Image (cartoon, rainbow, N blue to C red; front, side, top):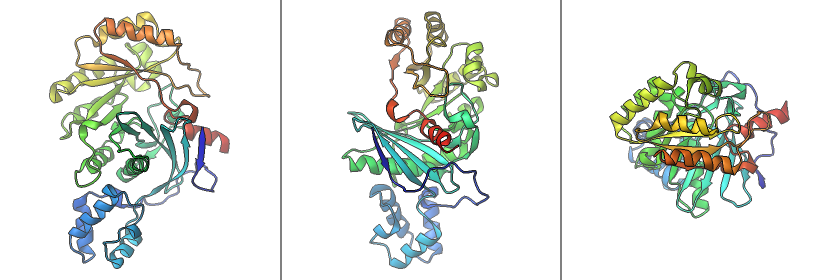
Length: 368
């Protein structure tokens, strides 16, 4: 494991001060930036130049934007910072294929992002909240509850930095998953604004079909997502086939139980024609039994879906373990035999605490 420190300052998760969230370049659509540039007495095409520098050339600051007038660069630097959070630590796996970045926000909070390189793609896992209110029993992110939502700009920073890191490695960022810290559908407006910005062909130009939004099951927002103009991928964190077990693992199930959740998924499929992925974190002795696998197969049979089995990435302070390989393969085979498309997806970066919330939790414990 390589531990690259990018800041000499101690990493402390401080309470958010009473400060207004700054508006940054990454918070703005191109149309909004054009209006801002015109207000500064500059032609609208200057905004398109800025966007090109920020999202195509992946410039780190305004000074790099050398075809802009110096006066405009200075004004933008004073009134419209590029970003409102900065990387303070990066961990890299020994094989150099997974990178976890810890950011500090403008108000002193900690947020994580993971970049994963595969032979055929480069995927960034983005966080949307500081903490999480859902409180899944096996997840490190929810241990401290929810501090606040991230802005669209704070999410864009993560995507742009991952694109820049990929470029430095001779790769192109191809995919984005909203499976980091937080529940995207509980920060719906900022999430959709973020997607609009990174999807814009004049900006980062990330195709909607390469963007996956994950949810623990916020039923009204699944219905809302079905009406959006983007052909996004939807992943639902299921983790159990019945209400008794799922309510223990995913407490929001008490508000929207399995039947209501699957009804919303069926409406989404009918409205969009798109397949849903069901995420299923396998935990030893909890939800990995043969009978549980058969129950899950019965629940999902006939639906346009795919199951991603994810052997748990253990969290030191939680009592859940990863099943042994034989049990994992047995569970997958039961689903596949029943006709449920299933893939086992082992977590990347176990040695660098790459599961969402783990690195943040480690630093909070260290600074307590």
